[in-house]
Image 1 (cartoon, rainbow, N blue to C red):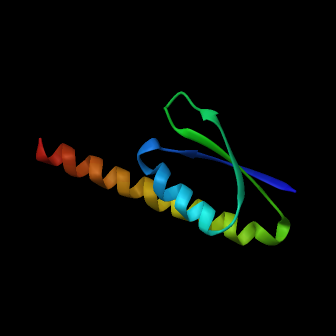
Image 2 (image 1 turned 135 degrees about the horizontal axis):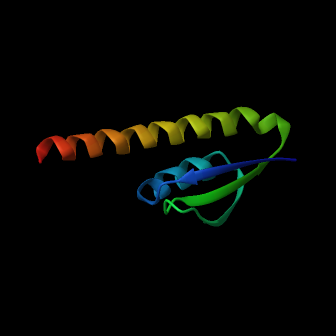
Amino acid sequence: MRKAEFAVPSEVMAEFAGEMSGRGLDNTVTGTNEDGEILVEVIYEKEESESVDELETFLDELREQIDEEDDEEEDEK
């Protein structure tokens, strides 16, 4: 068994959880970090590595969306 940990911003947790459950990955919420992100531990088999990599890419895309929205809000001020 392998383990991956994700720090998920709370504002995108629902999208991340949907993607994770859609892939059928076993997971546990383990807490939060100092930035208020939700820590999610994913336990997987070697043959599920590609799904975990895709989940990581999905989280990166969600983070980019957050950054873009923050930039747009700053531009409006």
